Amino acid sequence: MSSLSSVHGYRGSHRQRENKTLRITDDDLDHMNAFPAGRKLELMAKIMSRTAAANVVLTGNNHYERAILRLRRDDFQLIDLQPQEFLFTSVWCRKCRSVIGMPRLQVAMLLWVSEEKLTHLTTWRI
Image (cartoon, rainbow, N blue to C red; front, side, top):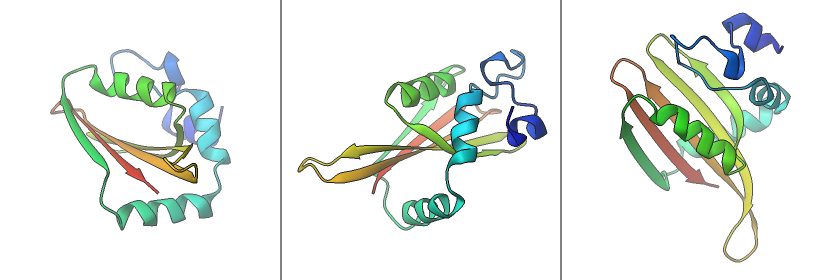
């Protein structure tokens, strides 16, 4: 188990059901820990300086989990995780091709507000 998972008690898909904050697996955490810190800082600076390509707000109990499953299905990989008391933020990234075939990155930030049962999914194209 990775150092982050042991510090925060993450157990991936085996996490306790009553807390229901995560559907982050050990594979996700392993990729996040292996992702270069310098590259992560560069990506974070780029997304904060750009306008988002899309922003979706969903209300309900299971939209957070469904959004994670959809990101994973679309080949996004976890690069950052910020758990807080009532908020949970994760940043996902995937390599893809632009319309003209040039390499490009897509970055998705998933924010879950547990008290209000809101899920915000914001995506950028870099």
